[in-house]
Length: 375
Image 1 (cartoon, rainbow, N blue to C red):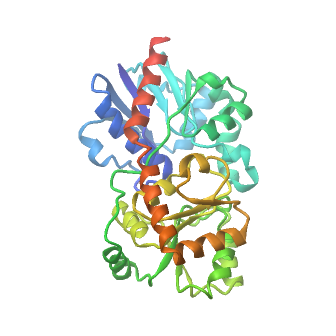
Image 2 (image 1 turned 45 degrees about the vertical axis):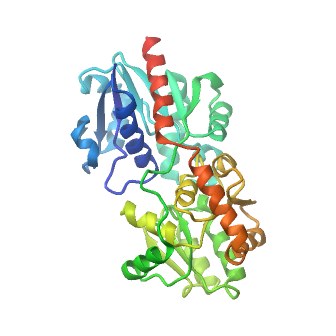
C-alpha cells in the first residue's frame, strides 16, 4: 500500500500539528514496514524533515498554502495523489481535504475551537477552516481526531456518524524525560537568565489559553512565594491583553515572556527545571503540553474542561479554568506540600506512559488499510 501524507506543518518552528506529523510519520514508517510513504507539502518556506529526510519520499510545491487551498476549492485541481505519482490513501493532516483522482482520503481534525469557542479563535483561522470542515468531514472516507471530547464535538457540530470518526490519542515526544533539577535550573539560568525558582506555562499566547486568569492566580500568591512565572510561546492573535494584565497587576518584574523556544532539548529542560506547570486553558483538542510536563517530572495544575480530563486523568490538579482562587491554591499547595508534589509527579509519570506515538501510528495505519480496502 502506498500512502500520501500532508507534511506541510513540518516548518522550522514546529508547533502542535507539526509535532503530530513528525511523530506520526516516524512511527508509521516503523510499524508499516510493508507500506510506502510519500510526503506532500506546500508553502514558500521549505519544510524541515530532520531524520525523516533519509527515509521519506516527498514532493514540495513552493506556492503559498492558502493559494493552493483556493485552487483546490475553485478548480478541484491539482489532484494531490497524481502529484505524488499515485497513492492508495491520502492523509490530510491539517483540516483541509484536497481533491484526489482515485485515492481514498483521511482527514485529521485536531480540535474544533473555531466552532466551539469562536470568540476565542483568530478570525483568520475561522475564515480558513470553519466553512469547509463540515464538507471535508462528509467527503472524507475517515476522520481522525485526538480525543473522545473532540470526537463528540465533531459528531455534534459537523453532523456525521460517530463510526466515521476514529480517536488516535497523541503522546509526548521520546526526548521528554526527567533530568536532575539542579542541572536543569543551572542550564536555564545560564542560557536564558531566568531566576529560580519558577512556574511555567507553555503555549501560544492567545485568548483560548486563558493567560490573564493565570496571571491573576499568580498575583494572588506572589507575595507568598519567591517564584517567577515563565511564559513560553509566541504571541498569537489578540495577545496584547495579556501584556496589559501583567502591567495592571504590577507583575512586570515577576513574569518573563521568552517567546517560542525552538530547541526541543531546551523545552524539555524548562519542564525539568520548573516547580509547577500551569495550564488553565479554556478549550483543548488534546492538551499535549500536559503530558510533556508529566514526562519530565513536573507537577501540573490545569483546567477541567474539554479534553483535559482524558489527558490529565488523576495525575494533575484540575479546576474550573476561571476559578482564580482554586488555581492559586493548587499552585501554592504543590509548592509547599512536598508529599503532594511527590504523589503528583509519580502519578504524572504513570499517566504520560499510557500514551504512545506507536499506538497512535498503529491505529492510524488500521484506518488507512480499512479505507483502502473499501475502494
